[in-house]
Length: 393
Image (cartoon, rainbow, N blue to C red):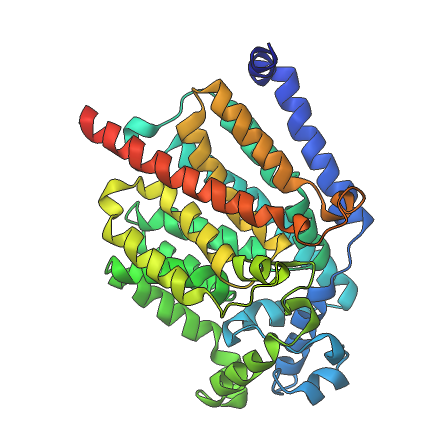
């Protein structure tokens, strides 16, 4: 009965419109008007001021003089972030906050658009999903979830990077290699999210895309390279990364940190950084790529990135393409869809709400297990669907 009711509601136009409007309203009220902190915007802004003045943005003394709170950490973004920083610093601080907010809202919309494209225009035509449901519900879920709110409130760059990765991936497999390369270059401003996608393109020998990405990245780095030196600027950035893991918000055990390593640490099990394991898993997926739906891979790679790398809870918005994969595979299976929706709801419950019911830091790490579960689930469905598609062809 419940499944039948949900199915009927999903087909109702008034419900679809209301669902999307509620998501947009929540985005405006919570993320834009209500609680914007712009903690991370400050670092981007101060770095831009430093480069406008011809100074080294990675120098803590320079950043401190220009207004950054170095007690909360230094500037850790790679030099190719310069165009964004310079753009923000060309305006007043108030205008810069408005600008980064508008940019993040725009990227959230574009991310939703490409997640819909992965459902409506998959590379394998037999996997195309008919009907208009994705046009309403995917944008609503992308725009109206707590992770999107957090990124916008903090002035973070995860939405920019995820949008660039998903759109760059989409165009990489639609023979638009120049556009794909430019978008992949943009995604490198957050290497912990883009590394595995770039590794995949390298294994695929997508030399034209990678060449465009490399040239575009160097162009983005021009201002810092001129100011600090073409080689020295990268040494300064690498040196800053040594302090990155010591910042309070990145230390294992901090509530906002998300990874398998952090889950094990919370359980009292200390293990080394798991990124090498992520690289091995990526290599294995590439080795058996012929058994997988290629449009599922972007979601799988991003899930592996947040599980085995260094991420925070707001970085889970990078899992948006997983939703496209689940939609393709489960849209005709009501019971499985209900299970997937329940898992998604559990992932989206805000941590401060959970803390009123759960008094255990280990239990509060349950999202890690959910992400492991949905990643394996999508991988299994992808293999099964690819085998069925081969059978039809």
